[in-house]
Length: 512
Image 1 (cartoon, one colour):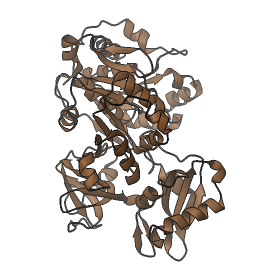
Image 2: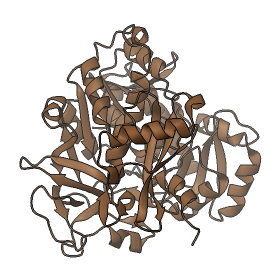
Image 3: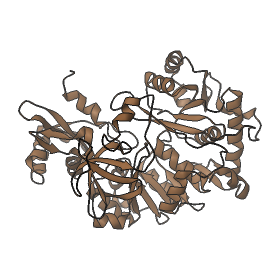
Image 4: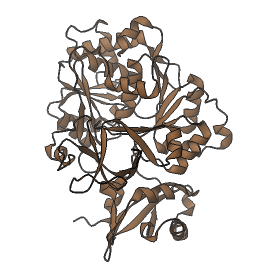
């Protein structure tokens, strides 16, 4: 359950390869470069328990750095390469990073790096990954190091930060193990059991590695002896090319990728051999029912879904066959036990809608934020924790999500769940993306607002808005339907598919 044994048993097999090129790393090369990386971290002054931050696009070096930290007892802090300088500085200060590795594309903005350097007192050095750009570069530092393991190997950890849509981002540590780095990886064991991952798996990663799940899944595959194929960035046709070229057996995507794949012309979609695929896993955001139906019709019953979060306090899973019998469900628990509770923390009867809590999973703790940590625990059952979602459980134990608790609209005393409206709007042939939320109403407290990304911007306007509102009212109760619609050329989404809805909603509420 670690790449090192595979460096001995299958040294010439690819541990990772970039999807669009011919460059990759074998297991022998990954072992050599990770050892050199661990030696470099020691030479740079990092010891067991120290924190190293990385802000990089998708590239091979990401993996040697990850596995170097994992054998040097270092906490690897993942930083989005899309963040601004002050956002990066906040994460480095909060996470306690003493070293920052940045890809050459990020290092090409020296003023931002100066801002970061001046704002983080504990930061010892900024090193580039790729071209030097006037700074010391990782490759040169590692080249001078021996390729043998460091004398004091210790398993490391990683820390991820929330997107910050509810204020400053919150840190979550993944650093519970101790001892030798060559030990079973719990997540790899879980996904091996759920999806039959192993040495024969060829896994395609189409998402940024600085997010928790993409890095976690690719490194899980490497700890099992499989091959990770990494896209520089997602493009729907390049995705299909990669599956055909590398004979990909498994992939994890987000629903927005499904939508972009389905938008390809039929001739393009049918022009690639996708027969190697055994598991197409989706997570991270709700998937509209018609979109999932279309994906199953296209690829067959290999679409798998799980519901979880970076907190790791619980997880549900559902197969295509289960989902076709229960459209909209996210499955039954495979980690922890699900409880549906009211606002006072009381568990609700079967079938009623309330806040989703998990018991029996990993405890939740947000770095340097005891108030946020306390807020996720149930007031009556102090070991039950929530990720802030609302849902219900049916008689067979299958969970159905309604929405985020923060996004529920209360209009005239009636609860409206925006996800239901968004799932309908996205099925309209002229809608590319949709966000629904509450805005002030003097009589009802809140009313339903939709912001639409049209497929054709020339359609944006009052006539299209009226047509969409009428279309919704023909299919949903009036109270659930938008009373007004605005248009944006592109909605703000993370690469993980997460919609930054609070960013949109804030434009419609008074500053007070």
